[in-house]
Image (cartoon, rainbow, N blue to C red; front, side, top):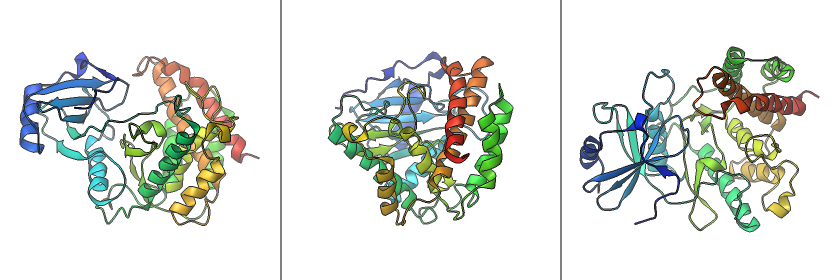
Length: 352
């Protein structure tokens, strides 16, 4: 039996579930399930609580469920997560955990949930990858690039995801959405955000595309092999939809532009990337273009600025909820200046 991951805790009081009913459900719906279960909870403030389940034979599973309480209609859709993971697992070479079952019967544990395999490996939450050699950092980054290209190369209609989101005009719809969300959570005047709200919709590049979008594609949302420098699974498909692939790529590459002050560990801005071991942004884009059959990645500053604008609106919302006393994270009120810094960075890329 594999060792348990370190980030497990006893199930928190708000999330306690009926283990006997869950075991009965797993016996009926999960091939190879054996006997009694032990349930622990993963740490962290994921919006969909996540649990580690071990059966009587030592097999390990992951359970993701909706949180308790009254929820927004479009949030916490674990059925969408399960659907995209199952489609990718069954029909593509995108590495995802094997999905076992989706349960919509709320009498089992009180809410919708799904079960997938537990994959032992490394979650590299710190983009600086401490303790990993420069050579291996480079290989992990190349694997990150390869897996994103695989996601975007999937024929979404052929794998049954033709109605997983709206086709076309993704960037335009996202700009409208996040402009509105930002206005609702604004706590101060940020000149660069106001400028971006005008500039971005007026400068959407030609060449609309639709692909599967992960929505939060970054190193920390993948599992790296326990000993080898390669990604064995992509996690956290909660924000996935059909969208423009270069929006995913822009989000993935923001770390190249973050210095200190952008989160706990910052990003790669100002670092000697050759010594650190990872490709330059230009090399990363060239590898992605090669893997997705493009001559180059066009209008790059737009997609970066769009991604920064979207993230600035998101962290502004987290900050506002923190001020209102509603945030799930105790550190929420640290996000305020980050929204300004992200908007300023975005505007510096396009507002010349």
